[in-house]
Image (cartoon, rainbow, N blue to C red; front, top):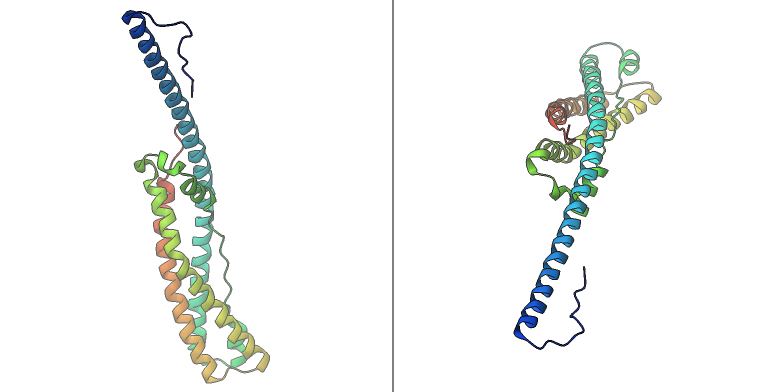
Length: 211
């Protein structure tokens, strides 16, 4: 901030006094105006940096989301085949050999969005400009518990298959557990696919960078 100093000469008349006061007021107004201008430029720059970082992150997440959707479709087909195999009357050895419980998912990035929220730069962006992005990140947060439960189902089923493979047989109690876990995983897979579809629509609508 600018410092405003009083003149060194003595004030002998009312005219000099008012000139002195006016000089101080004008100086203060100039100082405030300059400070606000600098702050406005800083906020604008901060907003532009946040927009660019979030936009780059959203573009990366768009590709990750598409890949995860494709993987979920493949896993859904795999789970449906597992159910058919478990419900069939084929020998245990053939059933064990046919069962597959593999999953893969690319991690969605949120560092730019979280950083913008923490340092306050997200508040500098009009809400209308970040509505779609906000929906995506909120939906992704809500999806995490379902995804983790889904991954746990897949790993639990895989562990049971490994046990059956090492034992060389598929006893009824393992078959029943596999049927239950596979059905649970299939349901969670469908929920995740639906949510990923909503996320994809939000990502395709989220354009923070100004043309």
